[in-house]
Image (tube, rainbow, N blue to C red; front, top):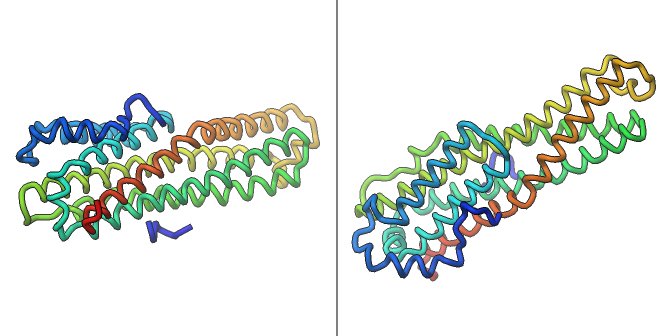
Amino acid sequence: MAPGFARSISFPLSPSRSSKPRMASAYHARSVSLPCRSHPILAHLHTHIRAVRAWAQDPTSVASGLAHVDALHAALGDLLDLPEAQAALSGASSCDRLLEAFLRLADAHGSFQETVVELKQDVAEALASIRRRDGVRLASALRSQRKAGKELARLAAAARDGASRPSRLRFCGGSAAEVEVTGLLAESAAATASGSAALFNIVAAMSASASAAACSCKRSAALMCLIKKVSEEEEETMALMERLEELEECINELESGSEKVFRSLVQTRVALLNIHTHIF
């Protein structure tokens, strides 16, 4: 995994990218001047930027957060399909920094997927160990889980740092269309970083909760409660199982959505790179 992002579903609210040629042709005749807030594609993108930011401020399920981010990048794909947007970006000096921002985001989600796979294995091992009353295996699985949880917390912190940089991606000069489109790309990158930080943090917090439940067992080996059937220790074991099962359910919920968001981020960067290098 790249430290600090060094490289950096089908959901109902997510427009299909297969519809983009139709949308682009429908709006092309109406978009003589791109920098207009009333342009349907711009309004659509602003709506999804606001939705991602709102979710990041008050995150609910991981599935809804992933759906909002995926929808944002579908809308961004519609914008990048517009000939006017391509013309505005083709000579923009800001493209290199925007490309780097989206590369960092794609790298972050790639690292997140790798960590979640490891975490899923650790949780499954921990649950199996509890059922078999194997304290040694459980202790080992929980150590590995804590390591994955720390990596998730690191990813969340790095994403929060990326979300705090939108001003560095805003540019003056150039045509009005260039300023408009680069500004929207910067806002999209910052909103995605905010949503990603919230998402990573949810999973990290759930992992930490499971670790705390393990540490609450009163014997220093934490899992002597698996050997002695004392009622209080049994309750602690059940609490640990509940936390692990909640974490397992969360991981199952986000797996397919996380893959879609990663692909959307890659597609966004490829579209921007193609525009920047005049390869259409």
